[in-house]
Every structure is written in C-alpha cells, then in structure tokens.
Amino acid sequence: MTMRVRAAALTVAALMVVATAVGCDAKGAESVEGDSPSPGDAKNTAASPTEGGSPLPVSLTGQRPVWGDCKAPEGGERPAAAWRCTRVKVPLDYAKPSGPTISVALIRKEARDKDRRIGSLLFNFGGPGASGVDILPRMAGEYEKLGGRYDLVGFDPRGVSRSSGVVCRDDKEIARSEASTDLTPETDAEAAAYIKDNSDFSAGCARRSGTVIPHVGTSNAARDLDLVRQVLGDDKLHYFGISYGTQLGAAYAHLFPKNVGRAVLDAVIDPTGDSLGHARGQATGFQRALGNYLTSTGEDPKKGTDRIAKLLAKLDRSPLPTADGRKLTDGLALTGIALPLYSKTSWPYLTEALNQAEQGKGEALLALADSYNDRDKKGHYGTQSHSQRAISCADSSLRPTPAQAKALLPEFRKISPVFGEFLAWDTAGWCADWPVKGEHDTPPASAPGAAPILVVGTTGDPATPYEGARRMADELGQGVGVLLTNRGEGHGAYGTASCVTKTIDAYLLDGKVPTHGTTCS
Image (cartoon, rainbow, N blue to C red):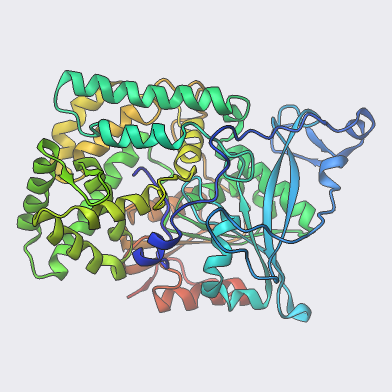
C-alpha cells in the first residue's frame, strides 16, 4: 500500500472498471535507444545545463515533437480524437547526456481558447508509477475549466508504462505471491518467506529491467520535466502534481527554481520523512481515516477498529473461499479495506464489503483488492506496482532489516491495530535486496527564488497525512510554499472540495495566490 496513487475523483466503482494500468508486456519492458546523438550533435550543446550536470545536446533540447493518433490502452478505449500523442527522447543517464537515450511518452489536448492560452499544464497523478497518458483523458472532465486556457499534458515518467516501464514479475508469479505470502508474518518461517518473496521481486526487476532501474529516481524524472518543458516551447513549467506527483514537483522546484511557473501540489508527501517516517505517517493517516469512516456509520471507532482487526486475524488463520476459486487472505482483505478510504464517496462500498466478509463472503473485499492491485477479471495485472517500487527504492537510501521491522511492531500496532503490522513489515520488505542504492534519506525540497507554489493538504487524507503539507510548505521556503488546508476526507482535494477547486482555478488561470494558511471547510 505504500504511497499507492488513487485520485480522489475516481470512485471505487470506476476503479473496478478501469483498474488495469496499461503496462508493458511482462516478458520485458526496457526500451533503451542505442542510437545516441551523433558526435557532431554532442559537441553542439544547449546553453542551459541540467542542475549540477553537463549541458544537454541540441539533438535533445531542439527536438520538435510530432503529435499523432493515440493508441488504445490495453483493455480500454482509445482516447477521443482531440487527444494527441508523441514521445520525447531523454538521456538514460544525465551524467552522460550524449549517451544512450530512452523516450518519455506524452499525451496532449490543446487549449480551447487559443487567444488566451497560458501554456502547457503537465499533470502527474502519483504512485509513483501511475500512467499520465492513461489517466488524464479519463480524468479530463475534472479539468475542463483549466483546459480552456492550458494545453492539458499527461506523461508517463521514466520507468512507467510506455516510458521504458519497469517489469519485475509475470501474472502467474504475482498471483502466486498474493496467495502464499503472509504480509503480516507471525513466525520466523513466515517472516523468512516474506523477505524471500520480496527479494525475489527485486531480483526479477534486475533481470527484466536492469538497464533502466538505476536511473528511474525522482531527480532524473524532474530533469526529464525540464527537457519536456523546453521541447514543448514553454518558458516556465506549469504543473499539477497529486500524491507522489507532489514529491516530483518539489524535486523540480529544487533543481530548477527559476523555471517554476504556476504549480499546485495536492495530497502532499512529507519531504522531511524517511521511509520509516512515511510508514509511521501512513499508519497514522489510514487509522485516522478508518476512525472517521467508522464514526460516520455511527460506530465507536475503537470498537469498530477492534472488530475489523478480529476479522483480519480470523482471515489470517482461515482465508475465505470465493466464487472464482481464489481465497480472501488477510493481506488481500487489508488491501480491500484501504482502497475505499481514499475517497469519502467510496465509504459505502467498504461498509458492504465488510458486512459480506463477516458473513463469510469474501468476493466484495477481494474485488476491491483486485482494483487496488491492478488485476482485471482475466487475471492480468498492470505494472504500476513494479514501477512504484523501482522509483521508491531508487529514491530512498534506507534499507531496514527484518529485525528492525520486527522491533517496530509494538509501536505500529499501537498507532493502528488494523494497518500497523503491515506497514511495519513493509519497511523491510519493500526494498529487500534491491540491486541499486537509493539517492537520499529524505528528498531536498528547498526552492529559493521559485514562484509561489500552492500546497494543498486535506486533514483526513489517509495516504499522505495532512502534516506533510505543512512541512512541504516550510521546506519549499518562505514566499514559495503557500499552504491551503482542506478540512475534509480523502486523498486529494481538487474536484471534490469546491472551495479548494475554486482557489486552485483562480491561481492557475488568473495568478491569484491565496494567503498562506488559508483554510477551506
């Protein structure tokens, strides 16, 4: 569950229809282009280098994208004709800007009002690992007003889907892991099996995507953004980041503060938290959201939490059989419980699924878990979780041991009797035996000299707790980070909270910066 994206405007019902991310074939995903820029191009470099790196060759900065028809996503519908697609070449390794390249996939819908066009507005919906090429056309109704004066642009960051997407396992391997791995091990044997499964996942990433995974970190994705900005012909980067997209936006502002245009960070990741801090934050956030959900049903939060914890313990001992022959394990049930907490409009689905599970019927919770895990009805899984882990482990230098994770259990159980154990063990499992060193403990986010950046935090956000928004605004710096508080529930506020939506629209369309500390109720 670690920082999985779920845009709040998508209901659980919609997610259950479109859950399968368009990924690369699990047989192999790398697409490193060996046709490096020619020696002549390499000598002719652009004037503006990457931050702390070598200048980029004109063969990259001088690209002129050719926009063409978009292909239908796997298992989905082709975007409407107004959406056009292209690819932009970027260096595989920014330390070798004239070396091999990969390509970043883009999708765009041009602004309707050409005379009042502001520029391009790039979106990242989080994850990390979410495909902006797939998501933006589906979400376009939420951004209809912004599409009047902006070209709406989605992209697959490096290591994601069409942009040399990371692949680590095939469908059978994923299904086998889901069915057999205990995500909250109680015995030494279960703990050893849990770590081995995660180590095997890491080995699969190295085997299938070993050329790409050393270079998929957020700082490189931020450098890609600046190259895309130049290729699109924009003087400034106008940007809308959600969830992990806030980390990417902050990384861009840190590296290229003078190139920041109008930027919004919604559902903010705490830049001061390392991987252990994020796990604590999510244990707090998910438990807080669960308590708010239980209160909304008229049930005492403590009693409701105990009831759900007992259900999970029962499923740990004896998973529920389901109609399709699969079993609802405690791990899958926990995943199914987490998903509806991302949006208050989805809480009724959680009520129904819990009621059914307590009656011995696991189909509803399993369907929610499948949606979260990008599994379709044919048993095919998307690759978002592969990209997510690769990017996260490229970013984070911490590699907690199983012993350290086990030591966290009492603290995490106290924070959340439902989610605590999973999140404690996840600290060790997530990057177990990862073949690439992480870049930093915590990502730098200071952006002195940048234009104001609107930072939006929701008080009931389960996945990126509100406290992270306050810290992000502080880290960006005085006069740069502008905090907007949404008193409400869910992961992401735009499109679900009218006050927040109006404030963001006024900022992006008219340049009206709200007062730092403004609160929407």
